[in-house]
Length: 399
Ligand SMILES: Cc1cc2nc3c(=O)[nH]c(=O)nc-3n(C[C@H](O)[C@H](O)[C@H](O)COP(=O)(O)O)c2cc1C
Picture 1 (cartoon, rainbow, N blue to C red):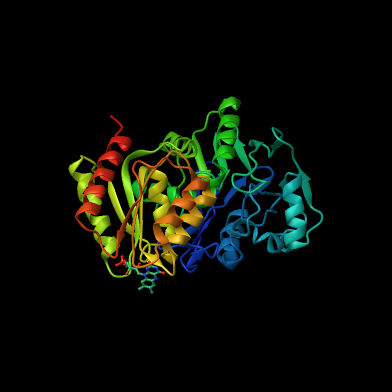
Picture 2 (picture 1 turned 90 degrees about the vertical axis):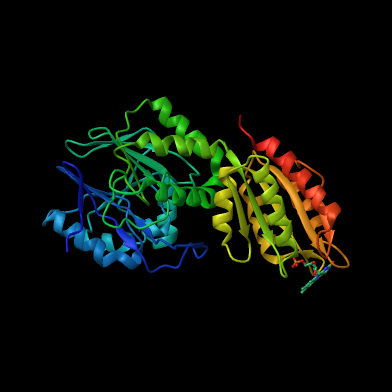
């Protein structure tokens, strides 16, 4: 089957879907799978923009072979060296020994170290171009979005930005590959999960990359990332969302993430949620850290301004899954949130105080004093939870 799809007169989508991998980077659940997007330009010279994961090499080569129809592949442009895109480099070089690999100096250091390839390099610098005949490709170095060698390739002829991992997210492309062929909301959620867990830590670098693109004043008609849909109907939508997320701009709403063994802390979570609703908050997400993978919780936290953590005490410390969540969060450098803390203890305490300690690193303003109940919440604890909800609602309401 030739599953390649035309993007413009001479540019084709030759990416593949991965429905086998359970955890992306051995970390992030792929409930909806993931696509590895690759693009082939058929011009006087032929060029492939990014590759796919090694496990998908057969399907990938079938697509390329059909389109090349006996022509050689002249260039492989590497926007990003992560193995889910670069894994087929050794096989590509075997099939096309004269292939020139286009990248920057850091790209080639990575290729040498990962694949022991030491030649066939065509080095480009920031702002340089490569002419394929009709198509002129311009390269913008965008380091640390989210790897150091990251760059973006802009096709000046068809006005397509090949953006690497930027603007990309989880989810296979099931038939539809363009934003006008799919339900964009579902992808948007998965793009935010990808962003918040993988790229978001480098938000200042994302801002720097967007600034570079803005200053270049290029007309972007299509955004073609390495994962997820190709944005041809409304590229501004994903561009502005990326801008918003990397500026840490949030929406009105509250995430209540809790860990509870026997339901007493959970009861406090439900109570505070009800009080938030009475205060007029409509977006309230209660998330059980034992049942929900932290990537989904971090995704919601990135979105909403208000966060409330609730934890029982376990072995004089935090409930273990709650500890994973706050540890991960403190790595992301995520900003612009307000926090509430509550929890339970039996004899020594340690849950609530550990949450307070983590927040000394994250430095999110506390909307109220932490609330700690003895085994289960009593009347005075519920009263404090209602006050917490009131203070939180006041902080997160936008208008
Ligand atoms: C395995 C286990 C370990 C616990 N360790 C502690 C502890 O070290 N210190 C403490 O104060 N309470 C400890 N507790 C008591 C719980 O924090 C307390 O029962 C709390 O009310 C549980 O809240 P939950 O119903 O939300 O799980 C422990 C409870 C369990 C089941």
